[in-house]
Image 1 (cartoon, one colour):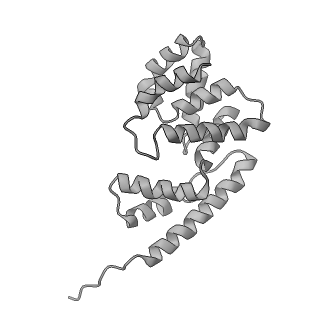
Image 2: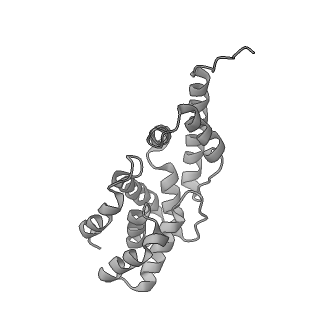
Image 3: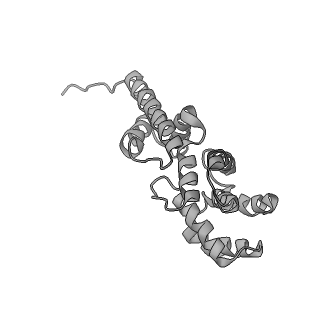
Length: 183
């Protein structure tokens, strides 16, 4: 695998993404996944390709991704597995492959607890959310909604969620309360 060629291929897919979902996010994901996979018997080539495809809509771009993989000397079967693992990496998925579990969990724990909170705040701002909306999104759509599949990431993720819960609770408590209008 030529990572420079892979990087050149995927870069256009990430150019217009926000700072929390751009190529630097993918590179952090690759590093996290490589760290987690050290104690597992995995296909590192599949893991690496899938990590770089993580932020690309696999169903929308399946044919161009598959063409690229085949042009790199991979079989269509291998390309299909890479696409499966990339799909398994998303937070709400239930991964079946070990590579998918590693990439899925790496996606949830990447950057640690401070990065997780930062990611919520920046993503909320980029999407035009108020701080209250961002806090509500964490509380209602994220907190205790996802899980890690590997023993070494479960505890980390649990600690990250707890940190986020306390952080956003305290932030919410310190926001100005809307004035009560008299009728």
